[in-house]
Image 1 (tube, protein in one colour):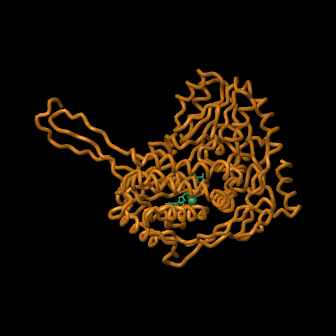
Image 2 (cartoon, protein in one colour; image 1 turned 90 degrees about the horizontal axis):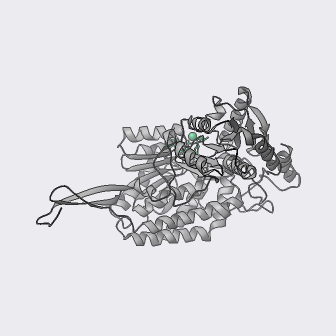
Image 3 (spheres, protein in one colour; image 1 turned 90 degrees about the vertical axis):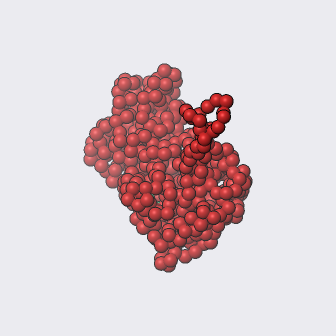
Length: 519
Ligand code: NAI
Ligand code: MG
């Protein structure tokens, strides 16, 4: 794709720096490089060095240069954070204050996010290469909404009166589960942080958050805002560091009551094992997928192409619900391909701070190389490259938007989560075939259907085994709409009132009842 290569290169020639960045400076008109204010662990309300004094580097994926050195937490730091969270849970005000008071503080946290939207957005763009305009228009506004949604739920958490079969009266109490461990990924650093902490805060829990090592900046900034909002010391702790050290310490901690994890299937399995062999803490896992988008003959071609591009390429394909398998009915196939190719002619890969950019760099070298190796694998397996397939730009982890045709169900690219800007196009004839092939995956996180036929939409949405089905839309997330996996995409919900459940204990209370006129 020439357009894509030249888009990156032209900017470099014009001196619009693609990567020579330093703290607090703007190196091109579009770049809004934030000052990095927070680089230490946030424990018990203070920013502190790690016990070992060790640090790790966080990298700008558009320049491959070091942004900052971040405190590297390990097991001992997790122990300190858990101690603070335990103290705040057992003796602090947070679980004991009226829900409406917790809600008030959470709303203040949301207000502060809105007030500091641009800084937070810039931190994310800088740290992980997310497109800045998307951050300011969609991503960061969605997290203050999420906080407000759960702030509103904090005083509506209640059990039931039970109808018992003998002379007893019973009711249930929903109590905060305790200290929770939240292990989050790098693809939506702020959104994942809030997705996990908002329902836990509403429930009255205290927490230790372990951000991904690729994306520590936004998490530490959010910790600072949480403190400013008035969340008491010890309630929300953030320990930056690596997965096999600080992450593993969260999963196996004897004093953490629940762990909520989003990330790879492989690590999800380790988290569950660690929970099983430590204190049997409850676990919820969101583990990505290989989600199908099904485009039927009657669909509007233009809309279908837009949804296929959105589903596969948004956030550089680094989305758990990404529609990397696009099944297209044979009658509309050629027109759809034509439309996709046409649309990609104006697709810009480049500086994520530039308002004209559609796609920034992959998050890090490891993910970049992983995606490129899947592209090679696709070629070796005999899929035809319709468009893209190469790295682009001289510096930074940029990859062309890539579409494979003639992909068969047995190919690795049709089965593994690639987590990059790679679409696999597959043709089908009948509805039955589409349903069967869409379900032939170990995953079950999401699916999309593009059709104007209500009967097709109803039948297919009920037949696909996945946690969320988008009909004539894609990537429509909402605080009120639960999301979570079937099969090996995991279990437990984020968003929606359902998300509260994992942070609550359901206690039954039973007492004799005398001389009641009825049971
Ligand atoms: P990962 O699963 O290793 O990382 C996710 C989080 O888990 C990070 O905070 C990490 O530090 C932590 N972690 C890693 N090892 C751990 C352990 N042993 N115990 C406890 N926590 C641990 O994901 P990674 O390596 O960054 O990406 C690999 C692949 O995972 C991606 O290519 C993608 O396919 C998938 N992924 C899926 C995500 C989703 O949204 N479901 C998000 C990120 C990655
Ligand atoms: Mg990993």
